Image (tube, rainbow, N blue to C red; front, side, top):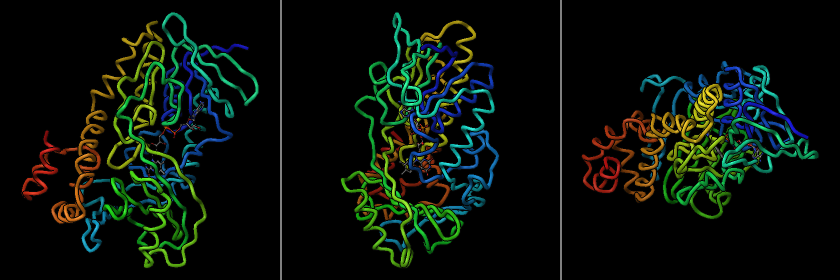
Length: 396
Ligand SMILES: Cc1cc2nc3c(=O)[nH]c(=O)nc-3n(C[C@H](O)[C@H](O)[C@H](O)COP(=O)(O)OP(=O)(O)OC[C@H]3O[C@@H](n4cnc5c(N)ncnc54)[C@H](O)[C@@H]3O)c2cc1C
């Protein structure tokens, strides 16, 4: 059996669905294949900024917004030291905690409404090559029929663990995966207008623990940690905070990894583009990938449709997407955040405590997101120890 499309998108996460919808809205004939029975099964804390939600093209809706947050608190290892910021005070809009499964479902709905053909339960098995070009993909449709789907461009949005594009667009040796686990918990005793982050070598070495309130006293409580036994680290974090979790019940356990090593070396090949987690489109220090992945999906789709219109889907034509993403503000944010992550991961708990005293909420947002890192670095220069261990790395 054979089918033919302008663009086949593999993977119905945020990156793939935004790519598929964008391409269909621009007039392309698009197929999206998703291996699971339904959309949005990948674990996620659900955090998304207002800008991220705008980019998704969806209006905020009670159908998938679980909580609107007004700010955040970052706790230093000595938890009497923390940085608290209200979004309005630091010039940020409110943020959202999404029911990720429902959000991704609504992205799928919007892609279908835009004209995208959708096959669920249909894993892509391998790419089809002809004369050095990817010209399609072999799909196991409905987990039964093996179908070759011809495509002028394949957009691979199949996530961090995918092997589909590895032969031609490998993730490379610097691709770092941090294991993360998350519970959905009841009766979490925090002010649910804020997101909470906890750092420190006793809490989450080279990572952090989070509490993202999801309304009605429930919360996503998770940890990402560069050590074996992420679940044990999360259990320890919970046990150390009886004031927050006394009487809380765990309603859900999920685990996955987050790629925090930055962008992979190449994002395009003849007839092929990679987006989202597979491509390393995640802000390393926060592990947030929803916004940056959707941005990648949108850009890739726009370039793919233009390239198809010109009859040139060579890597050289498609590399406009690399120029826009890698060479643009997203690439810079990811690189700067990666530098910050690497330098901060070398700090002792004492140094993290000092950092918390030095920085304010705006500094934390900028540092974590790789924005105006130079400005924050100059502030850190005032502390001689942190200047040597952090500021210089940030300025280099
Ligand atoms: C525990 C945890 C918490 C997180 N919390 C946050 C957060 O609060 N905020 C934030 O911004 N980011 C968060 N992230 C990161 C965020 O979830 C990801 O960066 C984001 O989902 C990436 O989107 P994606 O579309 O690239 O990939 P994915 O969401 O992984 O989607 C890939 C899709 O491809 C499908 N697929 C895979 N292989 C195939 C195949 N061969 N054929 C067909 N389909 C296939 C998968 O089933 C999946 O649906 C978190 C991650 C984890 C693990």
